[in-house]
Each structure stands twice: as structure tokens, then as C-alpha cells.
Image (cartoon, rainbow, N blue to C red):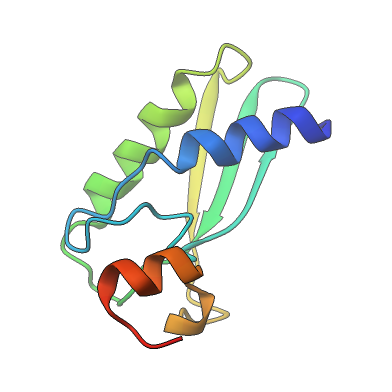
Length: 103
């Protein structure tokens, strides 16, 4: 996957908003990695802010929908992982400011 395609994938994921926090999943630091294979299958490795998040299914569907808008993506697999655990330190400066969290 070339750098431009990787940037397109990350850009599409910035359109996925965490419904509880109102900030996109990239700036929240929830996305650990994204890849696209030669067959058009995107794989997103991400976490959630807490285990048992009631909106996990919604976020996963939003990720798939956002990436399906890219013509190069034919299918998307979302891998939810818990290691490394998410912490507020993974958040961008933008997300911290928006949520009123000291940097």
C-alpha cells in the first residue's frame, strides 16, 4: 500500500465519530493501524475506550461504511483489540482540547 492510499484510509476513518464523545476515532487514538491488501480488503486494528462499550457495533459499522466509500476498498475487517490498552495519552491535542482534558 502506498503512502497516498494509507493517508486516504486514515482520512476516511477521521469521518467516524464516537457517538458518546463526539470526536472522531482517529483523534481519540482508538485506531492502532490500517492496511489494504492487493484484493481490496481493508483491515482496521482498533480499540474502544472501554470493554463492553454498548456502541461497539455502531462504531464498527461506521468504520466499514466510511472505508466502503473509497473505490479501492471492496471489504473491511475490523479487529477490536485490548492490548495495548487505550489511555487518554493516545488522544490528539485536538481531542484533548475538545473534551477539556489537560495536555
